[in-house]
Image (cartoon, rainbow, N blue to C red; front, side):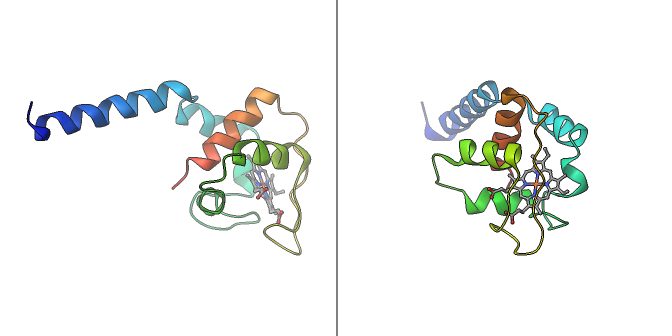
Length: 109
Ligand code: HEC
């Protein structure tokens, strides 16, 4: 098989796998909206909290990032991004929702 026909097949297979492993992005976005995240956060620019793309690049390559962020979301966070504004705890989210949101934030680019 020539590489030119083989490479796209590989790419498609890789995309299929990564989608199967995570909750679909659209569902995660709905969860973020329903949880009020987007009143303080946006993908590409800072509002009250940091842009989710900036969070993703800060933690790129950190293998514990999903757990760290799930904890920051549940317990709130202060001093990491802003000296003046803290993120309030989001204590009513299930562990599954926290994991979905943390992975979704890390996937923004
Ligand atoms: C009232 C405003 C507000 C709301 C609502 C809010 N955040 Fe935040 N968020 C912040 C602020 C401010 C920070 C920066 C805190 C700091 O400097 O440590 C932050 C930080 C974060 C971080 C980075 C934490 C870290 O450890 O680096 C993540 C991830 C995050 N928020 C996700 C979410 C998600 C998901 C939701 C919805 C469930 C949410 N936030 C709701 C204001 C908010």
